Length: 279
Image (cartoon, one colour):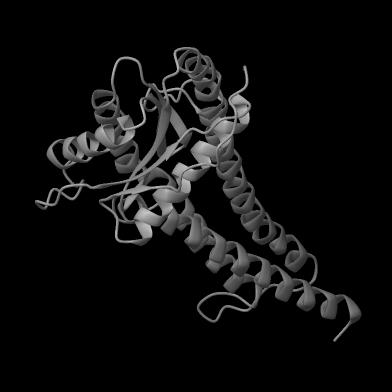
């Protein structure tokens, strides 16, 4: 066998390996996007085509020998281009998804719920905390999240999660009071600053009741959604640090509530005593 023929065999094996790797990536992407029919179709068809390309690169299909010489080299070109195009397509989808997530979190308002995102929320709660301190009114914060969203996304897709979050945001707004400042702490976690030391517990109990009544499970099998809630008091000291501390404590209490089985309210340890300072 000539050196050129040997190199052609090596290249066929390399192209087959590349095609099989692209096929694995395509099938994985298809499974992840199984709730989006168009993405699923393109990803799985591209993966299947790469499997065929791998078979062609290693000697042909149905026992037909692969061409040698110049036709063999030319035959490799479409076999190489197919996995490259599939990988580029999948990379484009990932960039598109990342850009959508970045736009959602960087926007002042969450487009899915209409509530302020974290940066905008903290810009609103600081003046509200300053006003409460001037009036000598203690404040509490609340963090809340619907239980089982990961399972819902796995079974029903991201569209079902987006719909649940919209309904959750509506119930959250209805459970809070006119003077409360609500928004997103994280994409799937809502929070609020509540004037009054016991306000968060009252709002938390009301929210649990609202969720149990108003939010059916997307599977529509008779189950109702539940919510886990964390609560913390806002301590003294500089306003920005006190708010960071309080919301972090409420999120930690939320995590503890989820680990305890969900559908409950957890209260964080009181913050250390400090002298409140102006904002």
